[in-house]
Structures are given as structure tokens and as C-alpha cells.
Length: 471
Image (tube, rainbow, N blue to C red; front, side, top):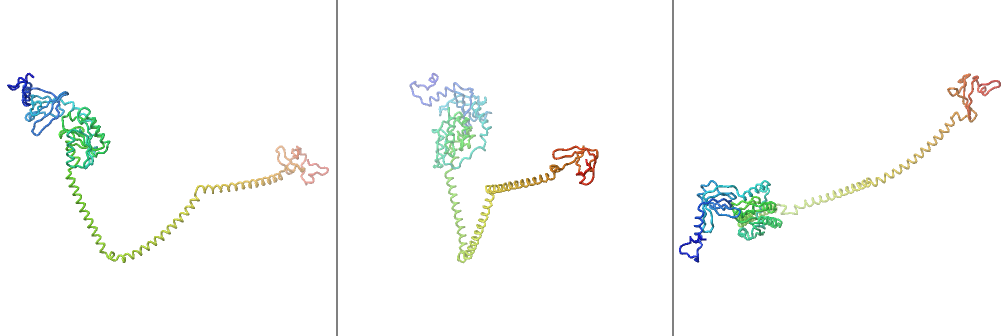
């Protein structure tokens, strides 16, 4: 602090009380004197471009950050302008912005030195999820026009939730808001946001979800660039509006959500339309309804008056009498037709029942069994009769055969002669030759005889006369 003590206003004691401005001026003088021209390298984040043309951003590395400003003149001369995630090397002087007590670098020149690690991670995840189709419009759900319950996943103590409440209460006080508080930056924020989205979706009571937070640096918003949050939003069945940061901030959550809102307040405005506009539409619909009803009533009244003017309406009995008679005639004809139809149907039903009973398998089987039994009995009788007849015929034929057997007469003293050696039956004496041999067959044997002489004459001579021999 020795240099600081040396620069204190003259006449100031060590025990004197300094104003904030005096201390700040001394620090500014000291800082500007020590670092009039310096080159600094870091990653640009939280880049802001107000309408003045100046550019405000933050230079950071893994352990610290430094505010920076590029005034409009230097920005117009520069060929490169800072963007979030860009690795820069800047030249400038260190100073103190007294109204806020911030120390910063006023940049005079800058050049890119590569992209920062966060920006590289953002681009890689963005490309991978885009390749999977998570950003496609075709998979995004429609946001309900007038939801009954809105779920909010954000910090319970941040300004984002209060902005949402203010917009909703101003526009439509009857809307129900349900908060699922979670961390929105720092270690574990991404996991808490994803868990909040899944919990609200599993609850199922919200018609639409708003997921987001207020603005900040790229580090502050980084939880909404994590893959676990993107996956939770993509898998959510409830429509999701992403409202992260300010209008210039675009996170992975914005790209994968069903609808992106530039701010939490804008998300609330998208969820609930203007109450007055809704009431005006409701009033206009009521007027159209009343007009349509009046037109319908007038049309019905005109139709009724036209009916009342008809002669049949003035003397209804005269108009109804012939129609009543015609109706009676039709009723009687219908009764007759119905009775005839019922009678025909009953007869068809009886015939069908009889035919069905006749065609029933059990009835057919019983009838076929009876026929089979009758045919079997008849067949047995026919077989026995034919066998008896065949036996009788065989007996008669046997008797006839026995009677016709030439050998049967041998038992009565007759014999049969055969010519040898041919053994042909001899029925006449002339068939034998003198000197030949014949076989004379008797009842109990046969004689083989030599023919001495053939005698042709009367039967008496065959029986033999005295003094003559036939054989």
C-alpha cells in the first residue's frame, strides 16, 4: 500500500477517513500508471452491443475474468469483433470504471487466437444433437393457447420467476402457476434442471412448462447447454418453452424446446394472451351467438306462421278424417300381412324343424342301423336259402351222376370192355379186332382177354348158345 499512501491528497493523515471517490481515483491512477499498455489473452463471453455502438464483454480464463470495453471508434477500425466463446488477444490499458468500482481494460486492438473450450463444446453438442433430429420442427409440440396450469422450472429466488408471475397476474389472474425450484448455474445445476423437467412431466398436471432463467455470462447460462438438460426437454411429453437469458443468448435448450422465448417475461406473454384481447373475442363470440339465435328464432316463427295460414290448420278434423281412414285401412292391411307373414314363417319353421330332425345325424344313424339290421337278416336268410338250394342241387346232381356212372352197373353183374392198348371204350362188337386184346372190367377187377373171334349177331348169341363161343 506504500504507493497508494504516497498518492493520497496532501495533508491527509493515515487516520483520516477517505471517500469512496478518493480511493477509487487513487486506484485508477495507480492502475493506469502501472499498466498503460498491455496485451491480454482470454476467452470472450457475455458480449453486449448496445445502440451506442460500443461493445462490452468479459475476458476470462479458467481461474479469473476481466471486464473489457471496445469503444465505437476502435470497433469501427477493427476487422474482427468479439463473439461469445471466441479466444482473443487484446491490446489496451487497464483502468477503473468509477461508477461501479470495476476495473477493466479499454481495448484498442484485438485479434482472434482460436475458439474457447466452452464454445467448442457448445458447437460439438449442437452438431451431434442436430444430426439426431432433436432440433427439427416436425417433432415439436404445439403450445396450448389458453392453458389452465403452467409449470415453471427455474430458481425460486431469481428474478425470472417473479417476472413470469407479474406478467401472468397482470394478464390473466385465474391462471395456476406451479414452480419446481432448481439450481440454474454452478455445479449440479444441469442435473437439477433435468430432474425438474422430468418431475413436472411425470406429475402431468401442467399444460405447458417454462424452463429458463435470467441473463448472464456464457458461464452463468452453461447449464442450459448441457446434454442432460437437452435430453430431458426432448423426452418431455408436456410442451416446453425455453426462456434462457436475453434475446441475444441462444442455448441448446432453446434449440431443442418446442418454442423459444427471448426472456422469461416473453415466455409468460406467449403462454397467456392478453386478457383483454381474450375477453374481446369472447364478447364478439357472444354477440355472434345472440345474432344467430335471433335469426333462427325469426326463421322458425316465419315457418310456424306459414303453417298456421294453411286451410288444414284452420279445420284440422276435415283434413285429418280421410287420412285417419287411410291409416286404419293401412293398419288392417298391415295386420293381415303380418298374420300371413307369421303363418308362413311358422309353417316354414315347422318344415325346417322336421327336415332338421330328419337330417339330424342321430336320426340318420338310427335309420341306417335299422336298414343295416334288416339287410343283414335278409342277407342271412338269402344265404341260408341259397346254400340249401345248392345242397339240394348238388344232391340231385350227385344222384344223377351216380345213376349215369357206367361203372355203377358193374355191381349188378355187368362189365365194361376197353380196347388195348389204347384203352378205348368198346360199345360194339365190331370195334374189337380178332387177335387183339381187350380189358373186361368187372365189379371187383378186370380180365385182359385175347379176342379169338368176333361174333356179330343177336344178343342171344352173345349170351351164348351151345356149341358156340364168342371170345
